[in-house]
Amino acid sequence: MAVSWLSRLAAHSPATVFPALGMRGEEAFYRLALNPRVKLVDSPRHASLLLVAGGVPPEMQESLRQVHDQLPAPFTTLWYQSEPLLELQQAGVEKLDSLEALPDVLVDAHRKTLRGELGASPRLLPDKPPNPWQGLGDDGHGGEGMMGGVPYGRPMAMPPTEDLRDGLALDILTFRLGPFFPLWPAGLEAEVTLQGDIVQQFAVRSPPFPRTLAPVFFEARKQAAPIARLELEWTRYHLRALFHALHLAGLPDLALRALQLADDCDLAKIAVLGKRFKALKRSLKCRGFFALHLPKRGALSKEQAQTLGGYAARAAGIDDDTRAEDESYRRLGFSLIAQQESNTQTRWRQRLAEIAQSLTLADRAQQDNVVTANLEALETPRGPWRDELPKDASALLEDLLPGLEWGEALATIASLDLAAASQWPREAQEKRGEGAA
Amino acid sequence: MALFALLVILLISLGGGLLLQWWPSRYQTIPTYPQRAPFLGGGLPDTHAWSRYHVRYYPMTLLLIAFEMEMMFMYPWAVVYVAEGMKAVMEMGMFLAILSVGILYGWREGVFKWQ
Image 1 (cartoon, each protein chain N blue to C red):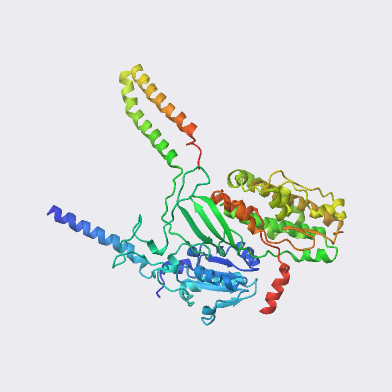
Image 2 (image 1 turned 90 degrees about the vertical axis):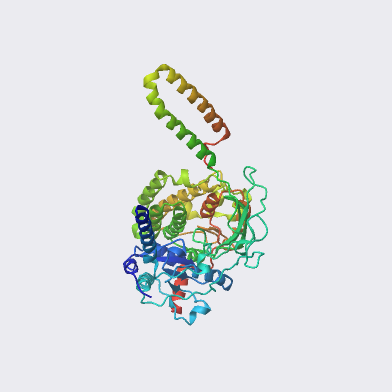
């Protein structure tokens, strides 16, 4: 294929990558989001590379084929700590397991793809209409109903059902979203029914992939662990969640600031982290993150908040934090923070207040080298870990989201931490990946 | 002759336009059917996207047009005002009073609330 001067010029631009995140793929995602040579995009139509990061379960491979075939030609697929699809294994696809080498490999693949030096990824699905026009006439013309026939084989979005908002009944639109939808947790797959812009039904088909925790949380269940390290990992976890919420709110510069702060959560930089977080919080307020982007909706009931645990429970006024049971935390002056109503806005206020508290605790704990005293229970950023790790709670979306506008529903999902906590610590997995390489 | 020249200019313009459209896309392949499907993160739609949808900002749009018309009326009025004086002010006052009642009605019905 001839390569136009436009393609040659585009080869020098940052590598546009659509990340299809599998299990344990989030570390690669956060690393790439901070790399200026790589641009992560929210739609495969804007990408020249498809990065499959982490393991994809067999039941999600059909969805992966759909996403794969939605990239515009020419494009290349890379597999990071993931097994390529059967059809692509003979095509000599690029597999890699090293996180350090990933940005360079992506930039190189982007350049070579646009210059035509790299074989483009083949199409996996047949090039024919998924739902051909079904008319009644000999040439497929005509039919029954308002539009004459069944356009592209799909039934028309009707009849209308009762409206949830103001009684104006509209046609309903049902679709399955996920598991590679970039604006909600990786792995979450749901059947959504919209009436206009209102969510009428939300059925979870597949829960999000379990989130990995830092190894220090697992150490703290076996032996006394430094509180400064625990609190910094706590901060990192919540700042990464803030990155997603800010990205969803259309504030990409603030999202990158939050992610950069999460990346800098290190014992050596602890003195400046508090100041940087305060500056970030001021910027959030000035840019209207609370007032414009966080609806006072999506409130959890006490039972739902109790099921979810952690900051969501405290935002609902439930005084539950296992750190209050730890003698070392009490000596550091730990006091429980809680809100009154667990809606999307108060959940983020709670989360940000807890980040500020964690940074203060980490600073104090580092000065006196304080370690944990309670091995029986541990407060992870996802929730309390007593007898077992926090479990998946995505099923509560089915009761929470109906009645919300679509934008409010996405903001509500971003304010919640629904995925189960993985039983494998974060770095241990990376080591296993390197071992496999 | 003039008509023929016009036809030639029209044909040349049309040809030039089509060439301009075709030239950058001559190497581009036609998107496949799966590529043309709506992106749903790996999912698929159950129903067709041709659905009746309520444009909820519609009353606000109508209100904007009403205000615009009012302004259009005020330009010629400003010219007449110089000649007519107080009489024109009274007439414009009556017109604005009627419009204000409409605005108050719209306000009560919640048209200023963005949905």
